Length: 319
Ligand code: NCD
Image (cartoon, rainbow, N blue to C red; front, side, top):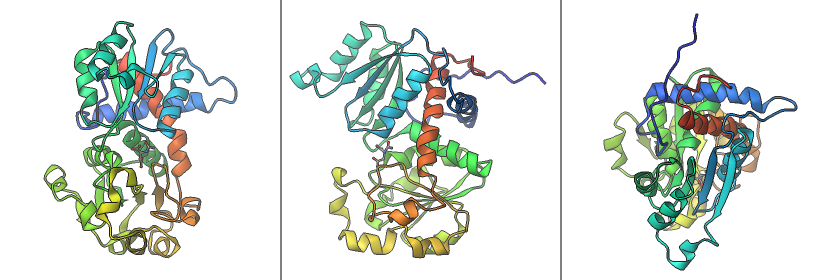
């Protein structure tokens, strides 16, 4: 049988919302091919993005995502420019559009950007010829995180369709949850959002009508195939939405007692960084059900796949 050729139809990855299930599958399949490259004992580099210029533009803090993109770029042999937002002319008052137009004048192929303003990426995409990848925009989307979460779930369960997944915690401020909601509902998973009522915005029901919303974590634990814990995002003002950390821990922490209520092989995910002892105990975060470091490992081939498909829409296999 001749392998099916699928032309990836997007120039940018601004979010999961515009992707079809086929696009998502194409990225996950391409990531599987790149995972094989990442696992080679010696040569972990392919020439797939040779002579392509990739700019990393991070206006918000990042450890995992930024390093993961950079390792992925190195494994694809790209030319990498790290734009340091702290020392750039933005500090002198230059606007994002001016920065974009100056970058455009240097003809990069790909821009990976994290920015606090939802929609900053769409603005950039209108002013640049390069492909733009959203590495997180405020509380809006974080598409590569959802793709690596999906890749991790698919690796464990062999499928995403029909899985029951609870996403727990600071739903209000999480871009990870929004990208995951798009992805998991498009791929046929059954999602339950869990958190205190103040962190579970009712408006989200209008966008995702099939998703269940609850504040009773323990009632939904036994049915779940996977539990994805979210970080309590104090820097985005979460402290004002919860009575206190003690109360939060009492109802929403994933700990040993709650793990006893779960299926024995439940998958525990967390996008990092973890507030150990708050949303999850160290015992569970480091315990046998956790896939947290697998998520980090899988982030590299998934980001390789995204960058490769944006630059090579017919990228059927590893060249
Ligand atoms: C997430 C982010 O920055 O949105 N982290 C990440 O990318 N791994 C989640 C978070 O900060 O809590």
